[in-house]
Image (cartoon, rainbow, N blue to C red; front, side, top):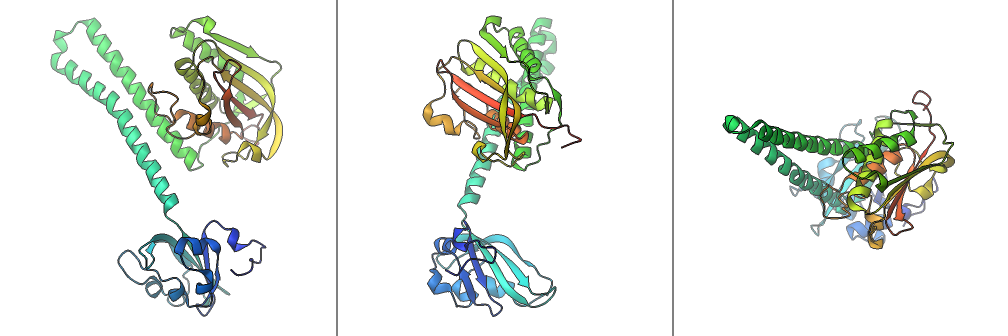
Length: 369
């Protein structure tokens, strides 16, 4: 392989294939990843014309370099967007090219080619297909119920008593709420994946938010003594998105109540928060700095999460049990926490149940961020 670039980065350290041809069209760089992806040895490719060192065809069987003519054509061309191409072996690869000119509209002095395998794209397509299948499955049940009850009421309205009508309409209302929640989850996933999740910061009283959720559960029939809330004062002033903090708390408490057993303990305390760049997806160990924050711990006394599943808890479609749900909630929770620059972890509580802990840095008002 050739020497490193001017920036000091060794091309062999790059995860994608890199092929560079000089002003005469001969290959002057062919990194390790390019050799691995194409099956062509660097020693074989170096010094040869680009079209013979890296023979490519499009999906219609046309020779790619002759078709695109990188050294000819319009002088304003900057390169070729990524597309699927075929090697002589029939192996499919993703290829993009950039044309480097010494001056605007001047002759091409370098053709820089990026070659990637299709495995990552197929994994993404598989994930999207799984998401569509899950959504279709989750939508079918409530929509079937809504359609069935409304059709029955329209056709036989006079045959039912007021109590029967009320029960049917309450079921329709609950199923409509379920569809609304699923659509909200899908929108959240779209925003998280595209880095467009907005955080509207304002003062948030986390302890008060916890008590609101506990009261909602007791009003829905949970015994009050099932919840134990501990708040360590004084808490730092927290600037966060109150709706999204509610979403995180709601998901964690719902999971503890539904899938856990015994007492659900919620602890709120000041903490040293390892803040990441908001939305950059960095792991906690890659934190940018440490600052004051608020930590919330939610634990139950159930069977807990199996050790082998700990690493998958915050991934799409992970379900702790077969008792319903899309498996998207904790993925969204992690996205919301990280969008605030915070971190979230999962482990075992003292009694062996599941323990989730998220920490939000103090942050700053929206107009200061």
